[in-house]
Figure (cartoon, rainbow, N blue to C red):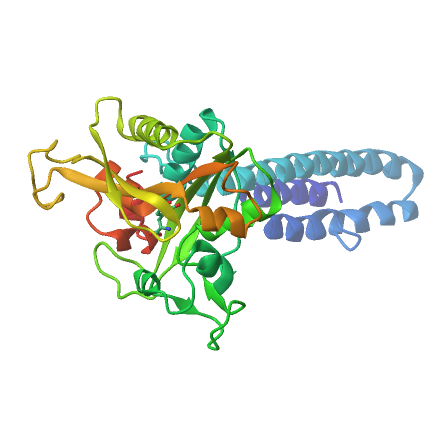
Length: 344
Ligand code: DAH
């Protein structure tokens, strides 16, 4: 019996040494320490032995059992450490690989220019307000001194929502000017507002035209507003957006809702006035329309034109962005092309 125990112990140690996985270790445990193992059998059979023998054999068998149990526990721990090492090894981080740069979100170039324009006018005391993109004929045309069949309607290729023609017909606003009327109807002077927003035209697209674009409208009404206020405000705006040294020009133009009407141009950003393809040889780039609010428009909104006067202006934001950044095609703005957008 003693010999048998010795043999068992040697075999158990050897086998334990070669167990390389949790499954092998479990097989080993069942074989050497399980309920049906030789060792457990030997310990159980001790009861049948004479007292003397039982004592020595019992002590030996218990010693073997405790030794194997300790070794088992150690082996178990080392195997689990191995498996942690292995899985760590598999997921190891290769610190020599070049990093992947994070992609940052950014504001769309049109939004950025909107913010700049709003900032310049805010400094001059203008409030910023938005208006509806789906408008009524009345606000987009009639109240702006462009009744049905007025030839000036041809200036605005319109996307209609309702086909029947009446002052209530809905359309996609062709400019932000209808907000002049909405503002003057609601509030009494003094008024000083700018209106950034989307506008729509029924237009074939090309490098300089899109069917959807953005405008900023401006309106100031008070008891002593003159053309001089209009000019100084817009010159200040041009200097704020295009730089102090940029030349600015004011000329007459026609819009039905202003009298006199004007247009403001800046010195060509590319040739500095010498004449090039961008400015079509003129040296100047037109950037906005403006004028003194037509008396009819004021009275139509319940404002007495003998007491109050006002100026208004409207500009295309894409055009200003194109001129500021030298963009060659308006369609880039809404192409969703990151190679373009990333540059701003
Ligand atoms: N609404 C005009 C357009 O889209 C621009 C404009 C011209 C606005 C003169 C004005 C203005 O407020 O006074 O072409």
